[in-house]
Image (cartoon, rainbow, N blue to C red):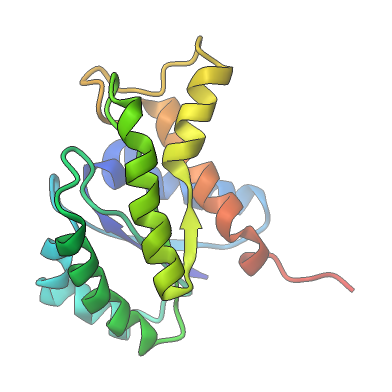
Length: 182
């Protein structure tokens, strides 16, 4: 199987796609991963990037994971317009799209419902998967305050945070990856 990760530093910190690949391997799934990322960039950057279009259309991916800029997130209208363009390319393939919901920076948990709502609105619009990372992030912080999910900049993920991201994406997609028995 093949997965393309499109995003920014919230995707590439701690080589999160490799962590996802490792989780797949632990579950008997041979997964190849490719990453198209640029720090601080969101859907608009990727929608304007010919490399993104080419990879989506000709990469023969099973899954395409889409992550938008998080801090600041920007205007929803710009996010949606760029996502529309990217999703149009994905619809021309056999790939399954998955939106990777990010988390808010430390001290700004109050913005998570807005961030979550934007991703949920797009997932509903496109009928695609949604990996609720941001919601799982805050749930984990409340249930396990002894674990620091944040990197020292208090915005990006620590190694533990990146593991939570990879696990959440895997859990979101695993039914599509693991063949049904029977």
